[in-house]
Image 1 (cartoon, rainbow, N blue to C red):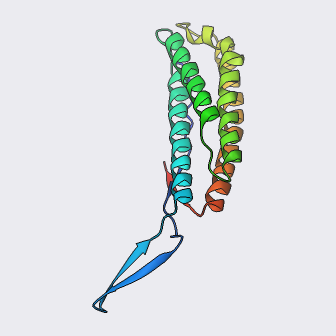
Image 2 (image 1 turned 90 degrees about the horizontal axis):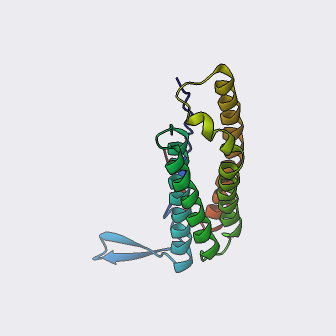
Image 3 (image 1 turned 45 degrees about the vertical axis):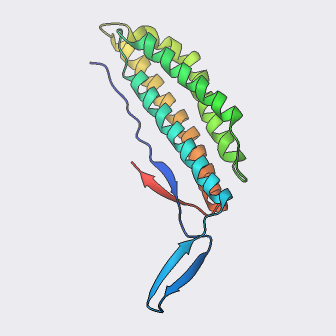
Length: 180
């Protein structure tokens, strides 16, 4: 039986958070309506954060699918994953970055570059093993060692993205909600 390693990360979505300012409007002195003033830079920051989060979630799903591959679909899944990474890198390179977003953008680029270099480099030694119907003990050990190494490296890149995302959110006065 082939081991399957899944990585579960928490994704942080931005939402309105504390309002930048409120205005009270009284109706007959009894009811009060609070109007939230959302500035364009703040809305742009929320949109940027969410776009980055959706990109991160999509690539994690793609990589997860790749690692579940077998002989019938490994080549196609690898090709699709590399294509998705290339699209993401192009999108990141052309993205309009809001104020205080450069480090967050660079952390996401670093994550995508990690995936690209890993999947075009060391992962290539694992592909022939995934195509095999039966694994020897040596094959299992090689895949296991690779999986552990990959997960440790991937976690470091994700931690960097999360750290920069939190700094970006704080700098733009947006609240991050956790999604599992």
